[in-house]
Image 1 (tube, one colour):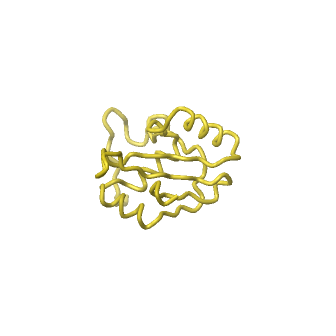
Image 2 (image 1 turned 90 degrees about the horizontal axis):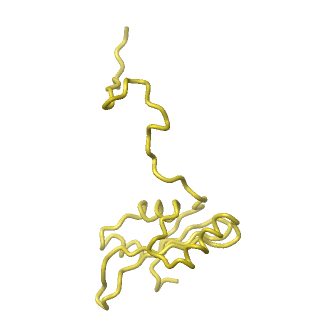
Image 3 (image 1 turned 135 degrees about the horizontal axis):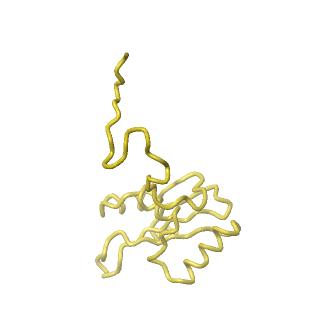
Length: 125
């Protein structure tokens, strides 16, 4: 019998080869398609400067983590997700304060037709 190059090892309390999909937490599902993802150079520099993560911001946007936004904007996003006729807009604080004493923000906007998602600074808009 040939040995596998990648032997299975038990996961605490679970016999090998008996892991079911309902035992894996993959987090919330994607609510819509991002389409082609682009970012402004200034946004990428700001994200790098503050050690934020583009994939994390996109994941939060895609899964409806809009808690940093006001209720009317969150509600508008839910309508956009459910009806698919308007853009989805997220705003994330990536650092507590800039030199002016305001939170450092990054916006993520997915177009109404879900063809493009743009990562940008508010001043890039």
